Length: 469
Ligand code: SF4
Image 1 (spheres, rainbow, N blue to C red):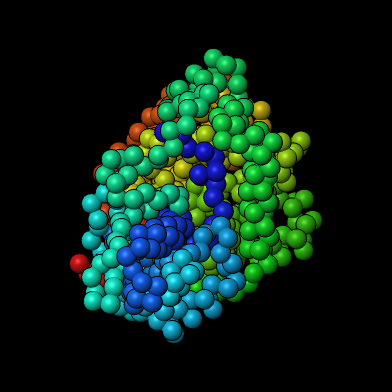
Image 2: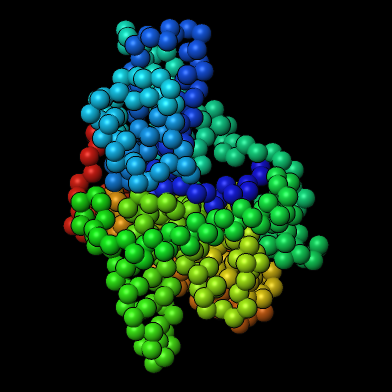
């Protein structure tokens, strides 16, 4: 199995990688497959209807996470990285009014969103985030249907891949393969490579080192634009909780009173908080974000990267590239050995993983050894173990937005602790990844992105619209 940095850092839209980005990718894939399947059997003018069923966590929190909108747009052929966030509202209004959508953008089929988009709390067999799409003819008979699973971070697999547990199908041989933290350390030390140099060599099997660099800098540009947008877009977040955006006001207060920072050495924390809040408020509003490794946790890597570029002497574009490569190497370990899905292992799999990725990456660009990098990544997760996913009202707002600010500060501190040591430590990165997986497996379902436990139960919330099944 080979996972690329660009599988983890994907440009998409908010608010959720597993509930928005994944379903949009699944729906657009279904639309293309369905059209190809009926090409020779259905006349061009034969009446058709499409139905979408969302199961498990998608059924429980799909509305709050924008899964319904993502599915409608995906069925029309839209992709998360190219869809225009500003035009989404008008497109959806059109589909709802006409009760027709253009499958893959080319063939009109009937679709009444009240009847043909159905939410079920029960799960399909292989993962909490399941979807079934069905294309039916005029008599109501299915002419093509397919099941997909959104397995976290925007990754999507079909039923066959899920049944074979082959969640990642790319079998490209890598020059420096690693499947655990220990193997990563051993490869780096044997070949005298930093984590980022090793990752660059691995990425170069898919594209040239120059192309890797260019693409990573583009990812950084999109992250920066997201922070910029979050600092200026005012208002109340959608969804009914009436959560007011805080980043613009914080940005004004920090920019208008720079001298205040002279008296408060901790003002840097305010800036890091600002970067994270800005990204996650944009995410909650359905704006353009980069999964890192998910949307819910999308603020941590950019916030720590902004900290690096704005506050660490000697920061450079090379450092940004190395930061993202190192973060990706750490993210791959979680993806392969545990999970980056809140629906599967709770928020430790999202905010915890992002914190671990950012901590290790910051340690590397601040001159850490590979053992200090591994130590920082380990600390970043160790103190997120057991973190539940309990989004109030099924929305990626409370506690998600603030949780990213806390995760960013924690990542910076993890790197600082690791850099003060010599890389030797008691708990290894592999230990915490195993513990995270097992803790996630032991967690009650209500703490796994169902909006039925934790803060989602105890804080004021807007009920999510689900069919009990
Ligand atoms: S609580 Fe964590 S895992 Fe759950 S939706 Fe929010 S950010 Fe994602």
